[in-house]
Every structure is written in structure tokens, then in C-alpha cells.
Amino acid sequence: MIKYFLNFEWKQFFRSSYWQKSVALNILLGFFALYMILSFLVLGVSIYPILKKQFPDSDPLLIVNGFLFYWFLADLVMRFFLQKLPVMNVKPFLVLPLKKSKIVNYVLRKSALSFFNFLPLFAVIPFGTILIFEDYSVATALVWMLAMILFSLIINYLNFIIESKSAETELSFLPIIALASGLFALNYFEIISFSNFVGAAMNSIIENPILVLIPIFILVGFYFANFSILKKKLYIDGSLKAKTQIANTTDLEWTRKFGSIAPFLQLDLKLLWRNKRPRSSIFILAIGLLYGLFFYPQKMYIEMEWLYVFIGTFVTGIFMINFGQFIPAWDSGYYKLLMSQNIKYKEYLNSKYSLMIIVSILMFVLSIPYVYFGWKILVVHFATLIYNLGVNVYVLLYAGSFNRKKIDLTQRAAFNYQGTGAVQWLVGFPLLLVPVGIFLLPYFTIGFEAAVATLIILGIIGIVFHQKTMAFISKKYVSSKYKMISAFEQNN
Image (cartoon, rainbow, N blue to C red; front, side, top):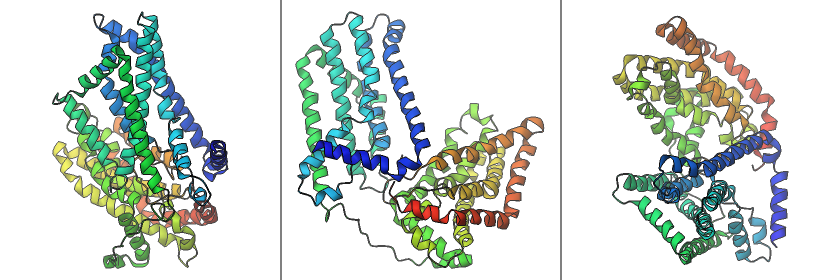
């Protein structure tokens, strides 16, 4: 039965539109994976000699064990945001005479072969091998490596339990952030020394190998906990059906002041408020608004006036960037129906434009208190606002005509790459770096005022030619209309 599952997934992967249309992205991810492998390999090879040189009177193995708490905590957080439970399209199998236990066991066992379980081995095995060459007993090195592998698998299945529970909340990433931050703070301020506890536990396992049975029992317990959770969901008329909710029936009457774009604006506002993933675009505004507090209070950054441009573009354009990069994929679930109506594409795009500029202006108003750190910050934020309204917004709208990936609005947003393609990766560079480059040239040759004026003038030019620019972008969308309809009909 396992070979049939493997054959099914093999065909599903290579025949999918995602694979065929995202070769470049897959190559990029391959290079990223190779980079991570090399980084862990260098860490595993170099950590022993570095520790031996820095702490000649201490045992490097004991030092490493003392830092394992941070390793495990970082591993858990990384898995939560980047690792997904390896699932398969189980609905067709549920009507066949197959035991649900076989399907669940296959999914869980497959997760043990995750890249995130193999990645630590590139650091663990070299370090363990060096221990043997440094006159540690073979048993000590092997037990330590086995324990590290077991803990990695424990974190693997613990992550799935946390994901299944946190997925029920609005901001699904908040529980793991709160948990990791709380554990880190308790350990950092020495309220509860988790580092000593984890280090002592690993040292005990090394000294008494029979204790390795404890992480084995924990691993088995987490496995069956996941088994129970997944098996309860394998029902067509149960959790696999679409979740229904009572919709808010507000008519958003105030939007009628916007004329012909009002219906589309209402549609976008309802989409933002009723669906999990686009709703994150609203909550992330707080993160964008507070972004400057990471830099402005520090003297080393307050003197870098060119950095104000990057921060200002991000603060005033956070919603524009987060929401605009997925236009029109937000509407991919009903895009065919939308395009079958007697509507003008220009009105559809103008509604997106209006929503983004309204929120950008609001973000600038809310960021005015940054003037406390200097009047130049407020001036640059205003200049980047105008630049966003006259340049960046059109870059996002034009880039949207190349979107070809459907978005599941019910999925969480944090580190969710579903619906993300090469367009989303590439568009970030002109949005954030180009205004910095434009600012730098007059800044170093003429002065601060000239650099600010350059950004404002470019933004005003874009606003003045709004009608012609939107007409050009609308034509691009019309020419790509049927390609997008075809692409949105397929699951990524």
C-alpha cells in the first residue's frame, strides 16, 4: 500500500501546475536548502575546535549541552513557521476500502523524512565524529547523536500538535511566539534555568545510556497523539468539509461615496474582515507602525538619514505591500465569476488603488509621533508616503498582472508561501530599495532637502498621470485575463 501512496504523490507533485510554473522558485529554494546544509555542516565541524580554543579548561561537549535549550527552542519556532505536515489529497481515498489508520500512519511516518529532520544531522554527525577522534568513548558519541536525533523527531511531532491547536485561533502564530518568548525570558532572567535542566538531562543520558528510553517513550507518545488528532479529521462529513460561519451583514453604506468603485471596495473590505489570511493584512499594520522603534531610539541609526527612507517606505506602505502583492489573487476563488460580469477592469483596479492609498495615508498620520526623534523623520515619512502613492502603488498593480497562483483565504498568513511566486519575491526590491537609491544620489551631491524633494516630485508626477497609468495597467490585465482565469482554476 505504501508504494501506491508514494506513486500517487509523485504524480501529483510533478503534474501539478505549481511545479510546472514555478521551476525558478523551486531552484531558488534548492539553493536556500543547500546554503542551510552547508551552514550546519560548517557549524558541526568548527564548533569543537572553537570551543576548545576559547575555553581550554572546559569540556566542549558539556558547553554544547548547556546551549541545547536554545537549539531546541529555535528548532521549534523555525519548524512552526516553515515546516508543514506532509499531507496528501486524502478525500479520494476515503471512499475506498482503506483503513484510515494506514493513511494516517503513512502521513506521520513520511513527516519523519522531512528536510527539517535531516538538516540537524549535518551538524550533529560531524560533531559526534569529532568527539570520537578527540578520545571520547564511541558509546558516548553514539548515545549523544541518538539522543539528538530523538529530540529532533520529538520537536517534529510536537510542532504538529501546536499547529493543529493554534490553527483554531485568529492569529495562529501568536501562541508559539508567546510560548517561545516566555520560555526564553524565564531562562534569560534566570527565573527558571531551562538551559541547566536540558543540559543536565543530556549529560545524564550520556552517563547512563539506559535513560535514552525516556525520549523514546516521549516520541512514541507524541506520535500517537498526532495519530489521534489526524484520524479524527479523516471524515468527509466532518472536519474536511468547509467551515461555515454566520457572516456579518453590514452594508458598508459609507463606501457609496466612492461612486462606481463602491461595489468592489465593499467586496475587498468584506474579504479582509471575513477571511483568515487577508485579515492578517489588518493586524500586521501594528507591526509596521512600530517598525521605526527598532531603529530611531538608537543613536547609531538616528544619524543615518538615508535609513529613514527605507523605514518610511515600510511604515506607510506596509498594507500596500502586504495586500497589493497578491492582487488579484485575493479574488482567485471567484475570479472567473467576477470576470464574467459586465464590469470595467479600470474600476476594479481603482478600488484596489483607493483602498491602498487610504490605509497608507492613515499609517502616515499614525506615524506622526515619530517626530519626537527628529523633524527630519517626519519629513522623510511624508516624502515616502507621496512616493508610495505615486510610484509604488502602480508597481504593485502592474506586477499583479503576472500573478498566476490561487490563494486559499482560510489558511494562516504567517510564513505561508501558498500562492507566492517569483513575482512576489522580485517586486520587493523596487518597492523598498529603489526609493533609497533615488534618495542617496541627490543626498550626497546636493543635500537632504534636495533628496526629499526628489521623492516628492516623483510621487506627484505619478499622481498627476494617474488616469493614463491606470489605463495602461488595465490593458495589461485584460491581455492576461484568460491566463489568470485558467491558472486560478488550478490548485497550487
